[in-house]
Length: 271
Image (cartoon, rainbow, N blue to C red; front, side, top):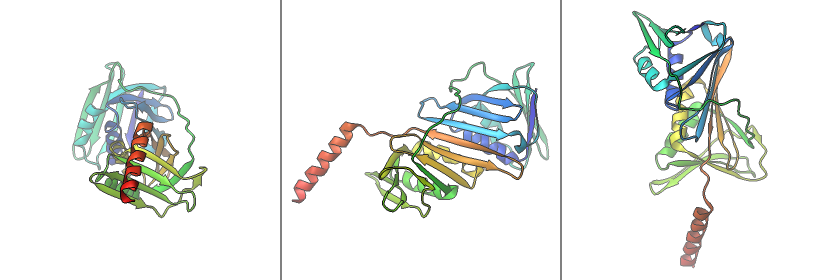
């Protein structure tokens, strides 16, 4: 059996919104020690790794592991109309293979949604990636920076200079240029030189929907490697996390050669 009651209805709404903006469906694992979800979104550009300790729920009962194959787009429609102040109860009904969601406030509303036989988003085991740079930022600061970069570009460069350990973001396009320098320095820098890594702003915008879950976000990245954004979910009794792995936008050699030729032509014209 599996059933639980969340401390905060708003917390549950944010979790569902965070997941549904990223993947259409997936297998949420209810385990005796808590909830887990690891899935690659359909384009295989990004992955979500979510864990919620049982102690983050007001009540939690799970005597054996249960795989809940959920259409998160459908679930988000039921959750969208709920109040953040409502109590939220989840219960797995094995006889009908449905997930029951109950919202209790000034009224009690109960929904039961059928679970899927198969999911389109692939579930995976633990992923271990090494990175050269690690930075801790306030989520509000990073959210503002990504919104600024999105005004002019489709991708953003994450940059760290070796000589002064300066961390900055940069976006460029025909619409304009944006450069943001941060006061925070990397807490770890194992790179041999300057580091520039490029990532999709569309995916970063989706990822930052999780920003309300945590005051800070941990960034880990390297040249031409995925960036990891980890939001730690903490309360007085326990903790959890939502981590995202986002593949880099690797520039092709032909593009770099064309850009170098363009720069050389500009230099010749200036001479």
